[in-house]
Length: 307
Length: 253
Ligand SMILES: Nc1ncnc2c1ncn2[C@@H]1O[C@H](COP(=O)(O)OP(=O)(O)O)[C@@H](O)[C@H]1O
Ligand SMILES: [Mg+2]
Image 1 (cartoon, rainbow over the protein chains, first blue to last red):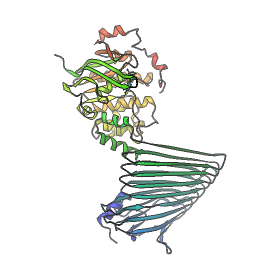
Image 2 (cartoon, rainbow over the protein chains, first blue to last red; image 1 turned 60 degrees about the vertical axis):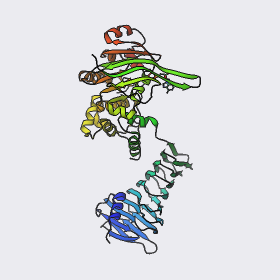
Image 3 (spheres, protein in one colour; image 1 turned 135 degrees about the vertical axis):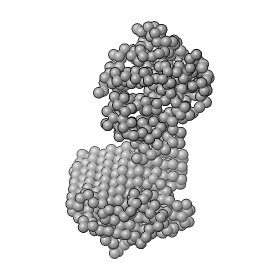
């Protein structure tokens, strides 16, 4: 299947893809497979019961990557996709997912992706997920990612989630269960415009001794957009957890941060930090004394903040 | 005839407070001549920082005019004044999450500056450039480090008028020597530009062409260094270096 210019542009936005990626990949376009490659260590197969794939990464696979971008350019299209990742013991891989929707029509376009990660002992996964919307149509661009992470002993998962532009409505649900010595790092960056709404919920359970989680969200809510960040960490063992929500509001933007910490073990050390506010006036002033206009200063501050 | 880079004409600044108006700057007139270094000194709370903010356009005077290179800039914005050639190092530098030292120096330079170019400004203020260029200008920097980065950004601006508000504050004694060299060097290459430093430091007062003493929002004394400095010695206005060792944030390598 050939991709048109809009689809190629979406791929560049969400996966920095200018050509077919190296390593294993699966490109999904308007609910069809537009290309796939398995490698000796990474096998991608289609599910038979529901829409989606199984991605099996052999134990001790090193320095390989999997790209599984999704693009949607057809108005009115709604899809639910289940992708399961089985990451073998001791593997070290980069997984790049992401969804771009271009909706020029008047009907909503929606992609609901459920990603499940079964991460083997001492494996290391870096997971990058970017969301992007474009198109002038009145139909909404809707993305509802669900992520479930099951980490075996000593494994590490780093997740980077980015949604900066064009998605009208998103409900992101992330759950994680960690065994002893496992480590989860989440970096979420979010910007909403117009009437957009973004809800992000995390429930992280630290079930083994020495498990650690660090969930950090940086977000900007502009215009009349609304965001809710609801991060809960449950410590069921001697463990340490930290969540942070650091947000800038502009115009009539609104943000609700809901801290949630639950310690069920005397040696669970859990911390939550949240700060919401407008851009500090002195930051604007400083950059203006360096010759920037107020609008340019604002842009620099936001870009840096969402870096 | 002498050309003035900056001229304040009868500038006043008052703020509204519950118990009536409070006058912070009262009819200040002073000039910073071209190719000269002027130091403003005086007791805390005398209005020095407020004066610097008025010059940069962060505050607008309630009375009086401000002239820059002969042009009336009283109504001009902060941005316009910066672009005309006024640079200002804050007494208390601002922190930014996510903005790197290199970004800030590039913004200050107003052009795409190679990392090597930015490093020169950092080295000039005694920071090992390699260690700082990629650091964020955030809470992880100490007060003294931040202060030196602030000075480096003003150097990078290469402005016609550079204003420094208590550049010595929070800088340890060892780096202070370095800082004096920065100003001495600026002093040597001052042609067609001017420097205004707010300071209590004798060694900075020593390199001034002219000294202004500001107290209770008024100019108490002003004139050539040779005339003003002897009057200040032994008074509370000039504080010896001992002050810095005991001062806040003084001891850092
Ligand atoms: N915007 C303001 N509103 C009220 N009081 C102010 C304002 N700005 C400065 N001041 C007061 O004016 C006085 C002079 O302050 P400042 O200019 O910082 O003095 P200096 O730099 O000489 O120590 C201080 O008493 C300060 O509290
Ligand atoms: Mg001051």
